[in-house]
Amino acid sequence: MREGMHEDQRVSTSVFRRPLVKLVIVLPSIVGILSVGLPWLILRTMRGREAAAFDAVQTVLSAQRRYSIKHGGRYVEIECLAALQPGCGERYIDPALVPSALAPEGYERYFEGLPAPADGKAAANELRGFVYRADPVPGLAVRYYCGDETGRVCANRGRRVEVVAGHCALQCDEELPAVSMKP
Image (cartoon, rainbow, N blue to C red; front, side, top):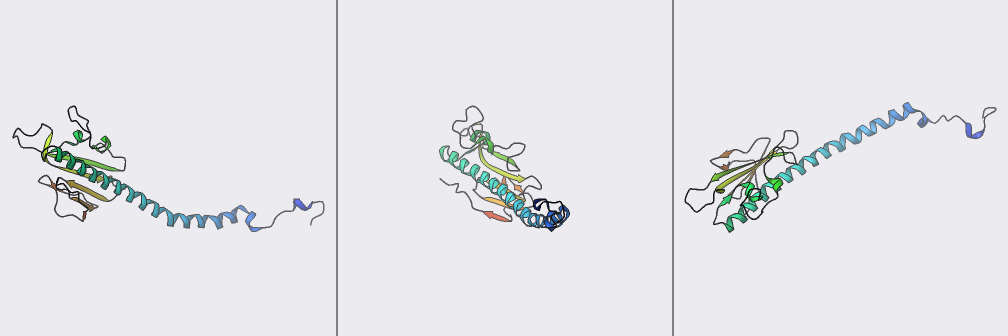
């Protein structure tokens, strides 16, 4: 011990007390943890968005089925399912499922209805068929979803599900669990 210094005033020569050495040892550890954890977190977030979009498609199909059972096999505009228009009656879905600029989970939603024949039996907002799509915002998810009045849910990776003659295309990357549309 140096002269004039007390025991508790010693200068430490430990390697870990030097800031540069700490940085050289700790920084690679942090980078290593992030390189493993960050891609996993991004993938989990993407899969969560995709699951929410798939659930939205199935919810709309189920609501249309319930409406159809009560109304002689006809379907209805999505705004009526959410009871957002006067005279629509019962609410079948949350208004958040109505297509808007951007859905909370990073998907754009689209609803297309096939008008009911003018036979005098259908109300003005009733349909003979419909298509409900959920298309991801680029970079937030990769699966595109489409469901129609057949109860079929179709998904494509990286490309939109085509709508042909008012129905989801027959060819798609994945056929997902369908919703029974029969009473």
